[in-house]
Amino acid sequence: MADTPPTQDYPGILGEIAAIAGPAAAEAVARAKGGRPAYFPRRPMAGHWLADAVGLDKAQAICDRLVGGGSGFTVPVPVGPSGSRARVWRTISEALAEGCSVPEAAHRAGVDIRTARRHKNGYSGPRRPANSDDQGSFDF
Image (cartoon, rainbow, N blue to C red; front, side, top):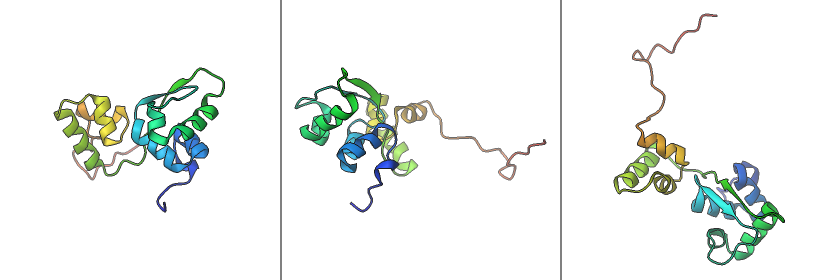
């Protein structure tokens, strides 16, 4: 895939997954759990979200490397590329209007839960000064 970023370009745990199982696996994990916490068990079983997303063999390889001999852990999964802001805001608005929870709206839009929460609470970005020519002045 020509548009696939190098493994070091994936944030957080997605970078580790990309290094272990490849960029396609990291993107599948981001689609499945991006913007939400996800549990990585010591031994993923068929039907576990990770096995469903990347296949059982890759899921086991990921967990072997990330969990090792531990008992599993929960970690927030970063979102992948999410597209234009207008599309993201529209997707969040539609999901919330349908009665979805904030985490589900974030998942549908491919953004972090904090982004969906800010949208729900009416945040639309930093406010510009009334006079757009006034960029602020700092006297030092």
